Length: 520
Ligand code: AHR
Image (spheres, rainbow, N blue to C red):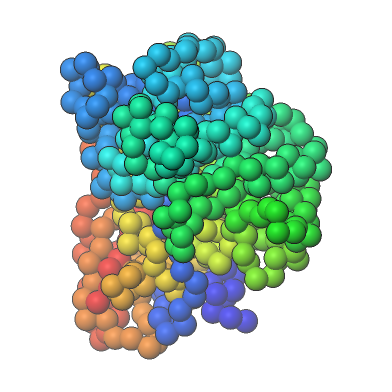
């Protein structure tokens, strides 16, 4: 058994004692067995025209009293820059399949009704050029979903020409006339969204026919995009455990000719134990905590299931699995507009995010991009805004702590997961992943799922002697602790003491905590 599979095996420790005494965990790091690169795009964000995700959350307008650059709020940009957001998926979601890009360019904008999300009036003030200004300010790449559900291939191809063609063509001249002479870079192109559902309720075979046309004709004219900068085309893939799209799209890809291809297959998988979402975002108890974490851990097997099908058609792993919608989906907060998907974000959600990042890292050979849903004010947001105020959520801090994982090399670990039990539910007690950053430094990300029991953790590498260790930890007074506009710093990372002795590192890991270690 490889070290990697050993790390995934559940090596059960004794049942959790009733008393909250610290338990010992040893994490053995196979530092001399480097694995695949962990693509930084697994830390992607998703910004849909939904609720206050764009209007209020990102766009306040040039005349706003809220500090902004060309209408884009500066506090949000600064916060996103600090977590090095690699790409921002836009404009949806379900919205994308009813979006007509021409409504959102030029001096005169056409308003529409956002039928998917509360029937709100969509002014289209924030459109293509504002989006590219936004990603540019953040330092992120563009990730565009074209309208496959209700648009035409020509409309999508024209949008690509508007974004990427130079000024020898009318499309490039139109963009220049709107103030943007330089060609934009589209790094990721989603060829539809949930075409098995809100994107048109299509049979996979029907979608594949459409996919071939979009993959051929939605051309990127930006010749500067070569090598690592080449655009990734992402086909609609499965939802949760439904493998029909995985099979059909991957089979078609394996039989493709020179006229078309894709580089990614999308997976949408939310943590939502009941549908419609009915669990509250605040004031919940340990039962919800355990249930939601148990549900989110299903991501590992889900990815394995789809990867196995992909391996059958694509043994060289040329097509990435792109988890471009993931996160916890809870009941909308009372008093918020229906359809705006507004929910608070707690310590539990931070742990959920860390568990997912560890899972994506373990599948780094296949999962090469992912987007949490959604960036600001919607679902598992990293930022919440209210007028001029902005709050970093616990999930934000996990993104910040995991920055060294971006483009790092996966390193296998071996550890005894132990158990955390609540009622009938049994979960792992701890989770860990390790990686070597681009500068060659080793890091370990550790999660203690148990909300009662601290862990005495030893980090050791048979091939290395550690001489130093720096770490930050994110924990909170309770599993349901949140950051509010009045108390924005209840859940914040702080340094944690890690002792170095005999080449090994030891730390007291508090209950319900995420820590990332930098080992020298
Ligand atoms: O993120 C909210 C919605 O969830 C998206 O618009 C859709 O793609 C998914 O069903």
